Image (cartoon, rainbow, N blue to C red; front, side):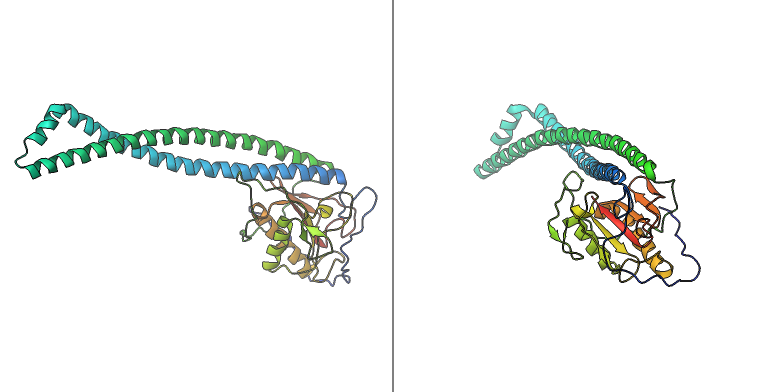
Length: 330
């Protein structure tokens, strides 16, 4: 995606002393991240369905490619076997059973008789094996054609589902978010992919892993995303699980990555803002590999299939996500 970089203002300005507390300020009908629960619920449901549909579509398309290659090889084998068996049929028609027997009886010696009989037996066995293989290959081709048709239908179904879920995401964003924004630079994907189901979707996961940032828990996939980010060099302060009544944080499916090194503070500027830009870009570049639902950073929200939009929080640095990158996971 050719997105533009969010440019930090002029010279670096010293930010207020950061607070290590994972609890952000919020007010009224917003959660500690500054967004209303209705928006979070709708975004979560639509983004989860979109992410799964995208994974299933990719799996169906890959299956189509694999089956097409296998079917081509099967059909080529059918051509070869058919030609060979046609040759056998033509030979049998020309020689006939009497001619075959004469081939044996016209032997010049007992040893020659035995050798000719063995040769005819081997030819018969070879012809029989080719006939059996032809039947097996024909059955394989029929099965492969049926499976290919099923995968084509699955891909068409997921394409429709993607379009429907994209519309739902756009509707959810229209509630409190603004129009499209330029976002941040998106690098090449580099994270190790999280496990998927055989159909390409991500498995549902419980909050079963210890959260290394708090006393709470994380899903295995969220922990994986956290670990991958750290391995990529994003080692500033992070707070993931926290107790609240809605959103992904209490489910272990969200983390807040501070722009400042040691905690959340005021509006990120200079190198802190650059750090946030790069981290947001990292998660978006690896969204398919990590199972990213959405990313919020610096008055902007990124969702799969829709991209960056203006994000309106509660007016605080934390609520507007101007001091941390919020990551929500499938």
